[in-house]
Length: 364
Ligand SMILES: *Cc1c(COP(=O)(O)O)cnc(C)c1O
Image 1 (cartoon, rainbow, N blue to C red):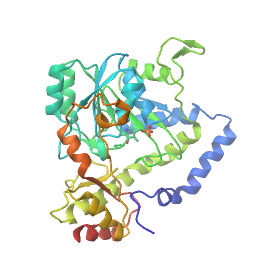
Image 2 (image 1 turned 90 degrees about the horizontal axis):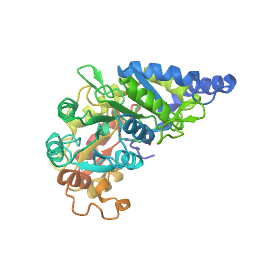
Image 3 (image 1 turned 90 degrees about the vertical axis):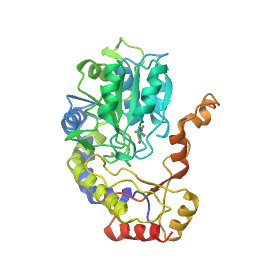
Image 4 (image 1 turned 135 degrees about the horizontal axis):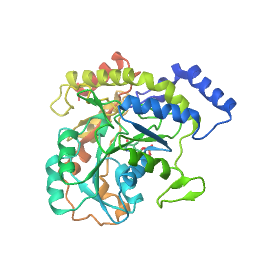
């Protein structure tokens, strides 16, 4: 069996009894959507992130959309977003009937470039930006948020790859005006179905997100706001997430350990590895860069090691835009999309398997 980049069967197998007891409890409870299990998980996840409010929603893309709407992104406004995160942020901006304004990234972190954001803000009036903590690595939050604050631009963090990443003890999701999480099964904290959350310290934004996830109701059958959705979290997912949350820091530590084995031991001038990392990185994806990506991919396959590309087509080059951004150049985003290659990294990967990956890379 070739080594996959992620193995959910191995991840979930030891939790089978724990998770089965959750579904049995929900089946017997009579509450199936937005019940006491959701409220409990919201309280626990808010505490984990160190914020006041958590609103459970149906998935991470909805969480981004509702977070944007909760910080007053209206139709026709402009929102800054990176173009190297698989259209997640861009899709949410478009769902708000707002326009994406693409910001280039830093070469070493693949996260939003403060320098390019500064330039873009001189020419564009942005209502908000989405900071994506890509691959599980915190973006340059402090400087970016200071810049946005000074210019009255709201900040939404996309934490779908960064549950539990920390800077000076502060967790991803606690820096911006609001933040979005996904609990899709492959994420660092993943349910056995779709799920997501908006977190925020802002009372008003929390209330708005809570209303928007259920049709824009301010009271039952009273639709006060436009832009409301049906985006609810169900009880089975919430209960399972509550059981898995205490395990998250341990899983993240193991992901980081594997990443640091790779970064310290892969030694090949044809392969650029990310730096050795501390708690600012939670190893969601371990992405290397090579000018000879296709050959490396084939080489690793011969060693029974599977890889993937996160992500091959930058947002501004996606066919859905019908050429609208043909003249836009994002040099670093475009360069990284041509060289990125993801190696296996998940908490259950053994040291022996990690060393097989290292040796295969070193023999390329
Ligand atoms: C997975 C992901 C999302 C979207 O989450 P879904 O639950 O699949 O809608 C958003 N942003 C990033 C960075 C992601 O990795």
